[in-house]
Amino acid sequence: DGGITQSPKYLFRKEGQNVTLSCEQNLNHDAMYWYRQDPGQGLRLIYYSQIVNDFQKGDIAEGYSVSREKKESFPLTVTSAQKNPTAFYLCASSIDNRGWNTEAFFGQGTRLTVV
Amino acid sequence: GQNIDQPTEMTATEGAIVQINCTYQTSGFNGLFWYQQHAGEAPTFLSYNVLDGLEEKGRFSSFLSRSKGYSYLLLKELQMKDSASYLCAVSYNFNKFYFGSGTKLNVKP
Image: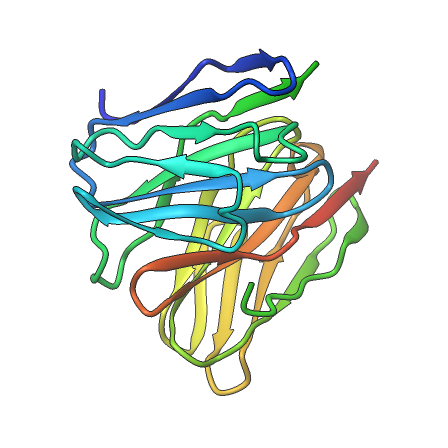
């Protein structure tokens, strides 16, 4: 079955530690995205990538880093520089970065809690 | 980003019709999407509009006016399971999706 998979579903981190969230898709999608969602709020764009080995900052990239070494993988690292990392993180992909029908498909999310 | 605005919360009665509005910045617009999100879950795709007019999908319809930077999602014959947040998302310049803050819909018996 094709889909987009995020792991782990729940993640706990001590203050000052870096942590990497996994996102894998087997949909052969070109574009991938990372969003952050805080309670009762919408999704805010952290980073996006339109093609392998290329990625761009979104609105709230500070304290985060990404890589896109393979088409199917787009891991997000939450660094110790991120002042308020506790949130729900959503990864998404879309089939084509230039077509009309570019709806985004979402993974099930990772809930990160800093303890 | 991109000034996507939606009402924060709405309440409607089971069996009724509800309209959720969304306004957005028009520069660079490619298309508009509506997603449904239940608490603690990932958003799921509902509809997509790229041209002006109404797109109907069963109980859900979505309308777009590109010149006005305006869309609405219409939900008919409301069911209790429709209680969720509804997110308006806009594609800009073929490379970004921006989301509104979402409208929390409460359906009451």
